[in-house]
Length: 108
Image (cartoon, rainbow, N blue to C red; front, side, top):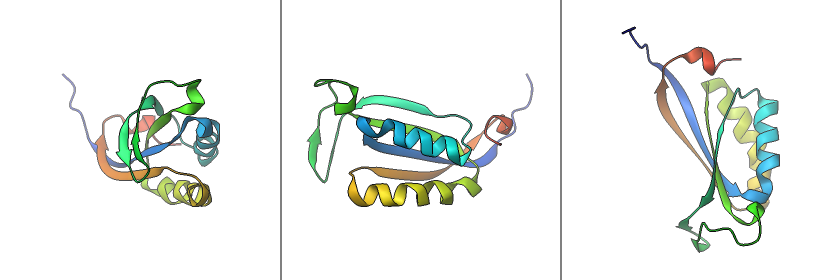
């Protein structure tokens, strides 16, 4: 088996209303993110109370989480892009340190 080398990188977990998916993915694409994962129909409790993850009318009526792993130099531009958005919309971005194999998948 080939040795797996680990490289430090940042993980962003972006939680927002599904109706804002296009805004978020466009921002990530323009920032140069190579890929992301979208998790639909989140449930949880926050400052606005409990949110159930079942579909009400369409996918815009649910919370989603976009998970992305990026080099550290992309974190600040992405957060600056979301700053004005979160001033007027609910949601949150979690930033954590992780390690990945195959760093080539995450660089420009």
